[in-house]
Image (tube, rainbow, N blue to C red; front, top):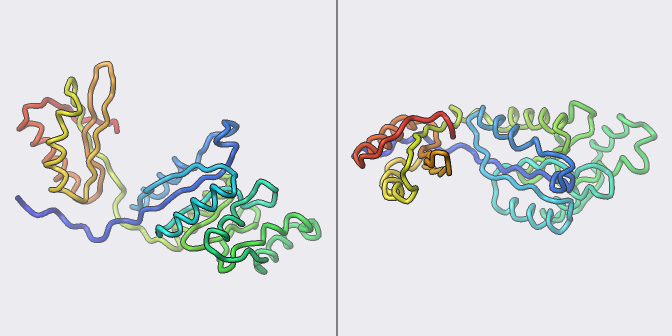
Length: 256
Protein backbone atom coordinates (compact mmCIF):
# COMPACT_ATOMS: atom_id res chain seq x y z
CA UNK A 1 0.00 0.00 0.00
CA UNK A 2 1.42 3.37 -0.97
CA UNK A 3 1.85 6.02 1.76
CA UNK A 4 -0.76 8.74 2.06
CA UNK A 5 -0.17 11.81 -0.05
CA UNK A 6 1.06 14.81 1.91
CA UNK A 7 -0.04 18.35 1.13
CA UNK A 8 1.65 20.44 3.81
CA UNK A 9 -0.10 21.95 6.82
CA UNK A 10 -3.90 21.80 6.83
CA UNK A 11 -5.78 25.01 6.01
CA UNK A 12 -6.96 27.26 8.81
CA UNK A 13 -10.32 26.35 10.30
CA UNK A 14 -12.39 29.42 11.08
CA UNK A 15 -15.23 29.77 13.52
CA UNK A 16 -18.36 31.84 12.88
CA UNK A 17 -20.53 33.27 15.65
CA UNK A 18 -23.76 35.05 14.69
CA UNK A 19 -25.60 36.89 17.47
CA UNK A 20 -29.20 38.04 17.60
CA UNK A 21 -32.50 37.22 19.27
CA UNK A 22 -34.24 38.27 16.07
CA UNK A 23 -32.63 35.32 14.28
CA UNK A 24 -33.56 32.79 16.93
CA UNK A 25 -37.06 34.20 17.27
CA UNK A 26 -37.80 33.94 13.57
CA UNK A 27 -38.01 37.63 12.76
CA UNK A 28 -35.05 37.36 10.39
CA UNK A 29 -33.15 34.58 8.63
CA UNK A 30 -29.41 34.23 9.07
CA UNK A 31 -27.58 34.95 5.81
CA UNK A 32 -24.06 34.86 7.20
CA UNK A 33 -23.47 31.10 7.25
CA UNK A 34 -23.79 30.54 3.50
CA UNK A 35 -21.79 33.66 2.68
CA UNK A 36 -18.87 32.88 4.99
CA UNK A 37 -18.68 29.29 3.77
CA UNK A 38 -18.34 30.48 0.18
CA UNK A 39 -15.96 33.31 1.09
CA UNK A 40 -13.56 31.03 2.98
CA UNK A 41 -13.72 28.02 0.68
CA UNK A 42 -13.00 30.23 -2.31
CA UNK A 43 -9.61 30.98 -0.77
CA UNK A 44 -8.82 27.42 0.25
CA UNK A 45 -9.84 28.04 3.87
CA UNK A 46 -12.31 26.07 5.98
CA UNK A 47 -15.30 27.00 8.12
CA UNK A 48 -14.85 24.61 11.03
CA UNK A 49 -17.84 25.52 13.21
CA UNK A 50 -20.82 27.87 13.54
CA UNK A 51 -22.81 29.12 16.54
CA UNK A 52 -26.06 31.10 16.55
CA UNK A 53 -26.33 32.80 19.95
CA UNK A 54 -28.89 34.99 21.75
CA UNK A 55 -28.38 38.52 23.03
CA UNK A 56 -27.74 37.23 26.56
CA UNK A 57 -24.56 38.42 28.33
CA UNK A 58 -23.95 35.24 30.31
CA UNK A 59 -24.26 33.04 27.22
CA UNK A 60 -22.11 35.32 25.07
CA UNK A 61 -19.35 35.67 27.66
CA UNK A 62 -19.15 31.92 28.28
CA UNK A 63 -19.01 31.06 24.59
CA UNK A 64 -16.47 33.77 23.77
CA UNK A 65 -14.29 32.70 26.68
CA UNK A 66 -14.36 29.14 25.35
CA UNK A 67 -13.59 30.08 21.74
CA UNK A 68 -10.76 32.41 22.78
CA UNK A 69 -9.22 29.62 24.84
CA UNK A 70 -9.42 27.20 21.90
CA UNK A 71 -7.48 29.48 19.56
CA UNK A 72 -7.93 29.92 15.84
CA UNK A 73 -9.60 32.73 13.90
CA UNK A 74 -13.26 33.51 14.54
CA UNK A 75 -15.68 35.94 12.93
CA UNK A 76 -18.37 37.36 15.23
CA UNK A 77 -21.33 39.15 13.66
CA UNK A 78 -23.76 41.26 15.66
CA UNK A 79 -24.27 43.08 18.92
CA UNK A 80 -21.60 45.80 18.65
CA UNK A 81 -24.00 48.73 18.40
CA UNK A 82 -25.00 51.25 21.09
CA UNK A 83 -28.50 50.07 22.11
CA UNK A 84 -29.14 48.35 25.45
CA UNK A 85 -29.49 44.93 23.78
CA UNK A 86 -26.00 45.15 22.22
CA UNK A 87 -23.81 43.21 24.65
CA UNK A 88 -20.99 41.89 22.43
CA UNK A 89 -18.37 44.54 23.20
CA UNK A 90 -18.71 44.16 26.98
CA UNK A 91 -18.91 40.36 26.75
CA UNK A 92 -15.76 40.21 24.62
CA UNK A 93 -13.91 42.25 27.23
CA UNK A 94 -15.17 40.02 30.04
CA UNK A 95 -14.24 36.87 28.14
CA UNK A 96 -10.71 38.16 27.49
CA UNK A 97 -10.31 39.38 31.07
CA UNK A 98 -9.66 43.00 30.08
CA UNK A 99 -11.39 46.30 30.73
CA UNK A 100 -13.80 48.05 28.40
CA UNK A 101 -12.43 51.51 27.62
CA UNK A 102 -12.83 54.36 25.15
CA UNK A 103 -10.75 53.71 22.02
CA UNK A 104 -9.49 57.12 20.82
CA UNK A 105 -9.37 56.27 17.11
CA UNK A 106 -12.84 54.72 17.20
CA UNK A 107 -14.13 57.77 19.05
CA UNK A 108 -12.62 60.07 16.41
CA UNK A 109 -14.31 58.11 13.62
CA UNK A 110 -17.69 58.23 15.34
CA UNK A 111 -17.33 61.96 16.06
CA UNK A 112 -16.35 62.52 12.44
CA UNK A 113 -19.39 60.62 11.26
CA UNK A 114 -22.02 62.15 13.57
CA UNK A 115 -20.51 65.38 14.92
CA UNK A 116 -22.28 66.60 18.09
CA UNK A 117 -24.93 63.89 17.57
CA UNK A 118 -22.30 61.31 18.58
CA UNK A 119 -23.10 62.24 22.20
CA UNK A 120 -24.32 60.93 24.50
CA UNK A 121 -25.32 57.57 23.00
CA UNK A 122 -23.49 56.74 19.75
CA UNK A 123 -20.07 57.33 21.25
CA UNK A 124 -20.57 54.18 23.33
CA UNK A 125 -19.64 52.20 20.20
CA UNK A 126 -16.06 53.40 20.79
CA UNK A 127 -15.95 51.60 24.16
CA UNK A 128 -13.95 48.51 23.20
CA UNK A 129 -11.96 45.83 25.03
CA UNK A 130 -8.47 47.06 25.86
CA UNK A 131 -5.96 45.87 23.28
CA UNK A 132 -8.47 45.88 20.42
CA UNK A 133 -7.46 46.78 16.88
CA UNK A 134 -9.95 48.47 14.61
CA UNK A 135 -11.52 46.90 11.52
CA UNK A 136 -12.49 49.60 8.99
CA UNK A 137 -16.12 49.85 7.97
CA UNK A 138 -16.41 51.12 4.37
CA UNK A 139 -20.17 51.66 4.65
CA UNK A 140 -20.62 54.09 7.54
CA UNK A 141 -17.08 54.36 8.99
CA UNK A 142 -18.09 52.99 12.42
CA UNK A 143 -15.41 50.34 12.91
CA UNK A 144 -15.48 46.78 14.09
CA UNK A 145 -12.62 45.44 16.18
CA UNK A 146 -10.40 42.42 16.56
CA UNK A 147 -9.24 40.85 19.80
CA UNK A 148 -7.57 37.48 20.48
CA UNK A 149 -7.90 36.47 16.81
CA UNK A 150 -11.65 37.18 16.97
CA UNK A 151 -12.97 39.64 14.40
CA UNK A 152 -16.07 41.48 15.65
CA UNK A 153 -18.32 42.85 12.92
CA UNK A 154 -21.79 44.42 12.68
CA UNK A 155 -24.75 42.13 12.24
CA UNK A 156 -25.77 43.80 8.97
CA UNK A 157 -24.49 41.70 6.04
CA UNK A 158 -24.05 44.85 3.93
CA UNK A 159 -21.37 45.98 6.41
CA UNK A 160 -20.05 42.70 7.79
CA UNK A 161 -19.27 41.03 4.47
CA UNK A 162 -16.95 43.66 2.95
CA UNK A 163 -15.26 44.05 6.34
CA UNK A 164 -14.67 40.29 6.55
CA UNK A 165 -13.35 40.27 2.99
CA UNK A 166 -10.82 42.93 3.94
CA UNK A 167 -9.75 41.02 7.08
CA UNK A 168 -9.19 37.82 5.11
CA UNK A 169 -7.23 39.56 2.36
CA UNK A 170 -5.04 41.40 4.89
CA UNK A 171 -4.41 38.64 7.41
CA UNK A 172 -5.00 35.24 5.83
CA UNK A 173 -3.27 34.39 2.54
CA UNK A 174 -4.84 32.04 0.03
CA UNK A 175 -4.21 28.53 1.35
CA UNK A 176 -4.55 26.60 -1.91
CA UNK A 177 -7.26 24.95 -3.93
CA UNK A 178 -10.88 25.11 -2.72
CA UNK A 179 -12.45 22.34 -0.69
CA UNK A 180 -14.13 19.74 -2.93
CA UNK A 181 -16.51 16.84 -2.44
CA UNK A 182 -16.79 13.65 -4.50
CA UNK A 183 -19.54 11.13 -3.77
CA UNK A 184 -21.37 8.07 -5.02
CA UNK A 185 -25.06 7.16 -4.68
CA UNK A 186 -25.75 3.66 -3.42
CA UNK A 187 -29.37 2.48 -3.63
CA UNK A 188 -30.97 -0.18 -1.44
CA UNK A 189 -27.98 -0.74 0.86
CA UNK A 190 -28.21 0.07 4.59
CA UNK A 191 -25.67 2.51 5.91
CA UNK A 192 -24.42 -0.08 8.41
CA UNK A 193 -23.25 -2.23 5.49
CA UNK A 194 -20.77 0.54 4.56
CA UNK A 195 -19.18 1.05 7.98
CA UNK A 196 -16.42 -1.61 7.64
CA UNK A 197 -15.47 -0.16 4.24
CA UNK A 198 -15.25 3.33 5.73
CA UNK A 199 -13.09 2.08 8.59
CA UNK A 200 -10.65 0.53 6.12
CA UNK A 201 -10.50 3.53 3.84
CA UNK A 202 -10.24 6.35 6.38
CA UNK A 203 -6.71 5.54 7.69
CA UNK A 204 -5.39 5.24 4.14
CA UNK A 205 -6.34 8.83 3.31
CA UNK A 206 -6.29 10.81 6.56
CA UNK A 207 -6.27 14.18 4.79
CA UNK A 208 -9.63 13.47 3.19
CA UNK A 209 -12.83 13.44 5.24
CA UNK A 210 -15.20 10.54 4.65
CA UNK A 211 -18.92 11.18 4.92
CA UNK A 212 -22.07 9.07 4.72
CA UNK A 213 -25.48 10.71 4.23
CA UNK A 214 -28.49 8.36 4.27
CA UNK A 215 -31.67 9.45 2.46
CA UNK A 216 -35.09 7.93 3.07
CA UNK A 217 -35.97 8.21 -0.61
CA UNK A 218 -37.73 7.29 -2.66
CA UNK A 219 -35.76 5.25 -3.30
CA UNK A 220 -33.80 4.82 -0.05
CA UNK A 221 -30.12 5.45 -0.74
CA UNK A 222 -26.83 6.56 0.79
CA UNK A 223 -24.47 9.26 -0.46
CA UNK A 224 -20.98 8.04 0.36
CA UNK A 225 -18.03 10.27 -0.39
CA UNK A 226 -15.08 12.39 0.63
CA UNK A 227 -14.33 16.05 1.20
CA UNK A 228 -10.82 17.33 0.71
CA UNK A 229 -8.32 19.01 -1.56
CA UNK A 230 -5.14 17.63 -3.11
CA UNK A 231 -5.28 13.87 -3.47
CA UNK A 232 -9.07 13.58 -3.34
CA UNK A 233 -9.23 11.93 -6.78
CA UNK A 234 -6.88 9.15 -5.63
CA UNK A 235 -8.92 8.57 -2.48
CA UNK A 236 -12.18 8.58 -4.46
CA UNK A 237 -10.81 6.01 -6.89
CA UNK A 238 -9.91 3.82 -3.92
CA UNK A 239 -13.44 4.23 -2.57
CA UNK A 240 -14.91 3.06 -5.87
CA UNK A 241 -12.52 0.10 -5.94
CA UNK A 242 -13.61 -0.92 -2.45
CA UNK A 243 -17.27 -0.76 -3.46
CA UNK A 244 -16.60 -2.88 -6.55
CA UNK A 245 -14.68 -5.40 -4.45
CA UNK A 246 -17.69 -5.66 -2.12
CA UNK A 247 -20.03 -6.16 -5.08
CA UNK A 248 -21.97 -2.97 -4.30
CA UNK A 249 -23.46 -1.11 -7.26
CA UNK A 250 -23.16 2.66 -7.27
CA UNK A 251 -23.35 5.73 -9.48
CA UNK A 252 -21.27 8.88 -9.24
CA UNK A 253 -23.38 11.66 -7.71
CA UNK A 254 -23.30 15.42 -8.05
CA UNK A 255 -25.38 15.91 -4.87
CA UNK A 256 -23.66 16.35 -1.50
